Image 1: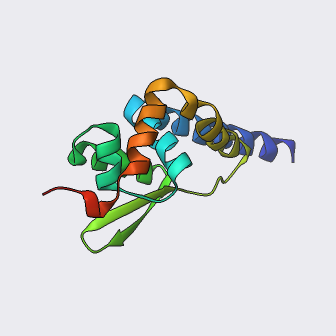
Image 2 (image 1 turned 180 degrees about the vertical axis):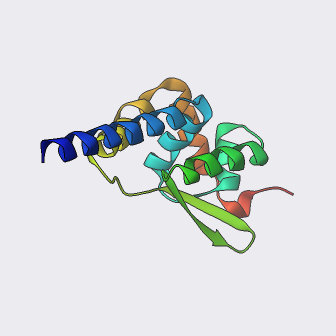
Length: 125
């Protein structure tokens, strides 16, 4: 019985390490913070808010989606992303950290203000 518990704990640590590797990228970390504060958000708004090209944001969101951190919903030609519900205590703590601590960073606060102001209808082009 003890051996099964140890194996499950080791597997949980492997999953948590993989999650942290995905979030180690600054762009993906900024996306996680933006999604934690803004909820479901269109790629075009995230790109404008982070001042990055849409293809780059889409690529990072694809990595996050493959890791199970975000889920996507298609609306016409646009993809909308949101963080998944926390599946364990570590994710719950991280999501709270994104929302309550990291969003207070000066550069992140500016990003969040830009994201809040945008809507898909305001998009040019």
